[in-house]
Length: 265
Image 1 (tube, helix red, strand yellow):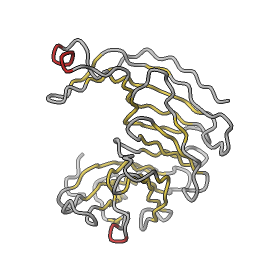
Image 2 (image 1 turned 90 degrees about the horizontal axis):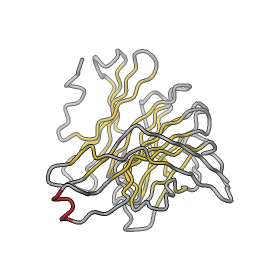
Image 3 (image 1 turned 30 degrees about the vertical axis):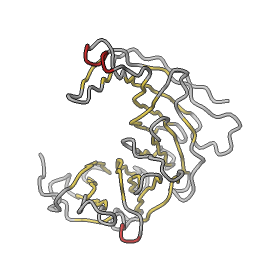
Image 4 (image 1 turned 90 degrees about the vertical axis):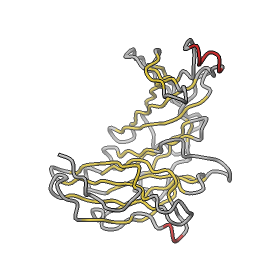
C-alpha cells in the first residue's frame, strides 16, 4: 500500500524510510525550497500504523541558523533504544552532519561528523549511516576519490578520525558507499569503484567504458580510536557491465563471485 499524501510540500526529493518495532515507520525527505541558500531543509514524518497515516511531521534541520542540507543520506533507527538518525552533507558540500532524535522524532539535534577543507565536495551520493547492535553509529561518505568511515560510541557527540576504506592498488575513484552494521564495532561497506578511465571512442563502441566495480570491505573494529595502522583490505565482486545510463554512458558492473579478506594491523 502506498501513501501519496505523507507530505504536501512541493519539490521533495531524497526519500528514505526506516522502521522501528511492528508498526512505526519513519519517512524522511529533503525539501528543495526555492533552491536558494537558506531554504532547503530535511523533514522527518512518522507513522504509528505501519505507514497508513503520518501524523507526526518534524523539521530536522534548521537552515535559517546556518546548517542547510546539500545532499541527504538515509535514515536509520536504533532497534535497542528507538533513537532516530539521518545523515547529510551540508552546504556548501564540505561538512557531514547527522540529525539525531532521542524522543521518537519529535525533535532533532544536529551533530558534526566531519568537516573537510573549503572547496571539497563530500556529497558524492550518498553519505550513509548505520547503527550496530551496541548502539554505535557508523557513517561512510566519499570525497569523489576515496570512501571514508567515521564511527561514534556516544550517539554522535564525538567521532573517530575518518579512515579511508578503499585501498586497492588499481582504484582510481570510489563513490556511492553503503554501510551495514552487525555486532558492536563490526561493519560491512560497499561502493562503486572506477578502475579504468575510458576514452570517448571506447564508450561509443561499447567495448570499454567507465567500468565501475562493486567492492566490499569488512571491518571488525570500527570503533578503534587511535590505530597505528588501520585499513581495510578489499575485493571486487563485479566484472560485467550491467547498466548504461543513456546520454551519460556510465557503465556499472555486477556479478556474484565474492571473495573477502579483512586485515587490520
